[in-house]
Image 1 (cartoon, protein in one colour):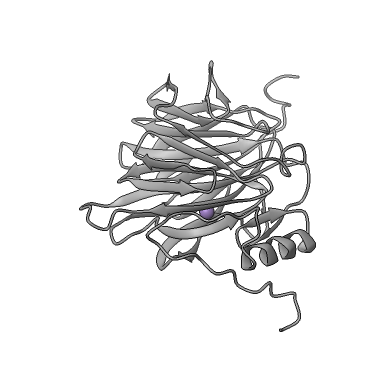
Image 2: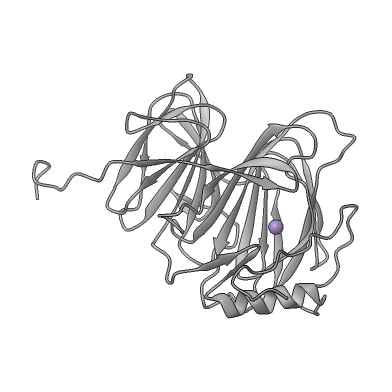
Length: 297
Ligand code: MN
């Protein structure tokens, strides 16, 4: 096949994040989108801040069937969970919590600390092979970096270039932050789909503008994408992976394969069942809403 008869990759699809409320703070929710529930195993992407007043904080709440990936650009948060973790996270570090069959955690912003908090919390849907397994937590103090054109890539999860993140990955998903200083061609895996977020200023994706609060989707079939920071420098987040193995059911803090699993988790959280142990936190426990498909009562 020659360059002229090779099919052109599809244009990036650009969509707006929706504003969501997390414990009283406004966040930009890039995933899920109505028409795009997952990108690889990534099923949720909240971009919060930069803001003061506890953005990023949330009291003890449960999860099943997912991993939380926390990455900060500014500030610090204290993570506590039911596997016994008590971990401060700062910019450049990664917190990765695996829920499996059940975990409880809290994220606390220090109310006496001066300065903004800015970051993302992402969820990865666990595959059938691990989603019923034990909960776990990892903290990585530093992540591998790769110089790529006019950018520095920090590899949060998965493999990029010659390096692999030490973070646990149950599927082939990829998470990379690119600190852009100029136009950069970013190599992509053609069998993967990708989502791109602008973290701290507008960027261009194959020449198309992408503002903070928007998300660009790239369908499989691409070898690369061209990124540039519109203001000269800025950070982008690239999420990717092979299309996920199954449709996921997402309700509240639970990722499962259907209503019944979510209802079971809802009832277990309400009953403080053993799979959702207590977490010591200064913040109040978050009550579950009632699943809207259940009859009132
Ligand atoms: Mn959570």
